[in-house]
Amino acid sequence: MIPFYSIAQNAPFENEILAFEKADKTSPPPRNPIVFTGSSSIRMWDNLTDYFPKHTILQRGFGGSQLSDVVRYADRVIVPYHPKQIVLYAGENDIASGNQTGQQTFDRFVALFVHVRQKLPNVLFTFISIKPSPSRRKFFPENDIANDLIKQYLAKRKNTQFVDIRPVMLTKAGQPVPELFKPDSLHMLPEGYQRWATVLRPYLK
Image (cartoon, rainbow, N blue to C red; front, side):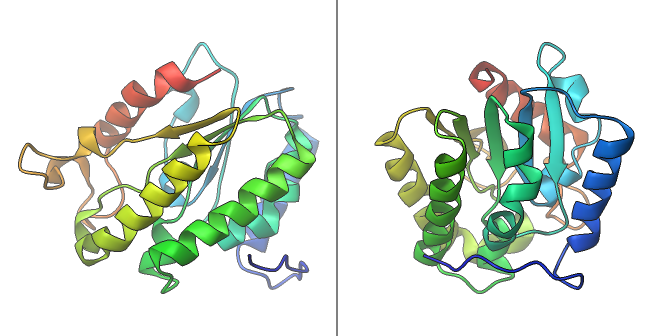
C-alpha cells in the first residue's frame, strides 16, 4: 500500500487540478456523471463526450499521471462529483516512467480502489487495461502482469469491470497496430479512440 500525500502548491499536476476546480465554480459539473480519469490517454481524448452521446460524461484525466497521482487527487477529481461510474485509465506511466513493476503497479491500483470504495461504496468502478504502446514495447511483460493482477482482483469484487482494449489494438500477429498512434508511438489518433469507444460503450452505465 502506498501512503496518501499532503497537497502542496508545487505538487505534480496541482495546477491542472486547480483548473478543474476553477472550471467547476464557473460552470457547475453535471450531477452523478460518469467520471473518466487517469493519465494522458484520458486527458487527450478530444471530444470525449461526443463518443458517448447517451451518457453524462465528465473528463478528469490529467498530465502524464501515474496511479499514485490519481490516489493523491482522488478526493478532488473523483469523490466530489458523486459519480455513478468511474472509468479509469492509469498504470502505464507507473511502469514506463515510474520504474514500478507490474506487482507494484497493482499495489498502487489497490490503494486507489480501496480509498474510492471507502468514500463511494456503491460506485461502478471500470478499469481500462493498460494499452500496448509501440514506444513502450519493452514494458509489455510488466504491463501484462499488472493487467492480469487487476483483472483477477476486480473479478472478486462487486460493481467492477475490467475492460480489455488490447485485442482491438493488436494485429493478428499480436503486434500493436501502428496506425492507431501518433508519431510518438504512445498517444493515440482518433482511430485508436474510436476502437476504445466501441469496446467501452456496452460497459457504460
